Image (cartoon, rainbow, N blue to C red; front, side, top):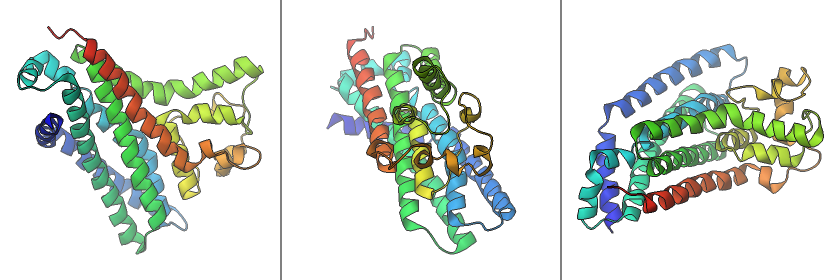
Length: 298
């Protein structure tokens, strides 16, 4: 299959990038220092605390950013350099190029993610001598899906655009959307419908709308998985929601399971977060392919 050849060649080219491995090395070094330092400050640290630190920093910053960096030039870089014409001259079509690039860039992110997860496992074993196997497997699976989702977003944006600057703007804009815009936007919709800010007990539709954000889906699923609240990069609950100050002391009351009355519906469980991340892999690529298929490359 021609997309396999494209994926193999592109993967080999990307893994030779010193920038990618430099970012990974810096991240692992910083995470090691933070984890060891924070563990010394916690009264009774456990292996799940290591997962918490990696989720909070690695999952919400490192994985999305490196995925966007790796993916945003996948198509538009070939387009600007004229390499696409060479690929098409070798009997590759646009679907082969897009799918091959997606597979190769996702493979690179998967390798980087597994290296980071292996480092986290090594820290857990070194510090505590044991592993919460189910939690670790869930952590690795969700983090791989998160990396694949942001890679798909970046490759999709790359397929939609015709210049490097537009692709870079789309990649940066997507991260800003998920970290700085999404939560206030959903809170604004609730205010328009209800005439007031959402409180600690929130409607199920509100929490589900927040979870449609891939970063939020990952964060909330990990909170349920480690049975502890994982804060977002920006504490929007304290800005755009009417949550009492007492809720921020232990923060467990901010978990999804404590913000709704009754049982947690299936679409707010940790496994459904995987479904949302899969959607974020499929939809951007589908939109990108549609735009790429119709684009005039001359």
